[in-house]
Length: 327
Image 1 (cartoon, helix red, strand yellow):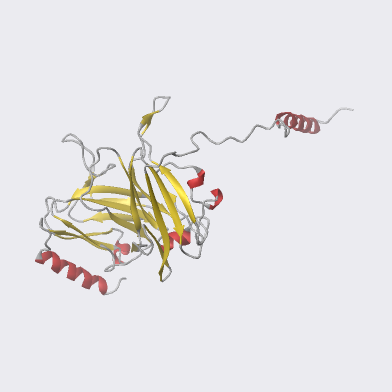
Image 2 (cartoon, rainbow, N blue to C red):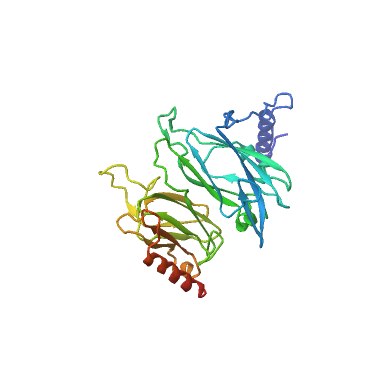
């Protein structure tokens, strides 16, 4: 009996599938991907403690009782391997998920890869910052240097929405050997909703520096809105460090940059360069957002660390105007 064309085609497909699927005895073993271990000998090991801060807020801290929002800024140099032991001192599961660095699925910090930390327990994550290399095809792997960040990926939803909304986030910097280093700890600005670091002006940070100091901003976006970051009186090169490399470097100079959710960038400037001391505002330049409280101050003092009368008066005026409510 002759098979109809459809039946014939079906039988051929079934036969080919049966031929291509190996039996249990013939099935190849599941192999770990090459480089499954990010690093065997960490260059640095630290602990992070996740703690309740009250009013629904949760933060990361380097020692018990020191949790804050944003969490501690983690710093690495290309070639480093960082081991982070996250201790969950809350009553909900949470994690740590890093951007920009290398890690195995064991350190992904997500539910799908079983990277969450149950209440009252701890877990170690391992992150590698690799050096620039040339691939076998001649293309360049530029390395890990950059301004990155880390955050929860388990609390509330599988994407950590409730964790990020509560304050479980922080900055991660990877430097290249020879990069300029700031004179002070980096200033971290996290834009989320219509808040900066989960606060509205005048409770937003007033960053302080002395004239001539090299300072560093790290700006991170979270939530569902797009923002812009603008710094008064200062400008930076739109590149990896914010600094130009030579007199012939024509990298565009900017003082405002667009920021989307999970975006991050950073830059260095010399405090007060060409403009002098004073209270210099930073803010989101989406007008409705700045009117809603998305602003703060960079207070540049004199070289010997004194606040000028004009700077102190500007701080008072800013606090007064921002205390009047937001529209």
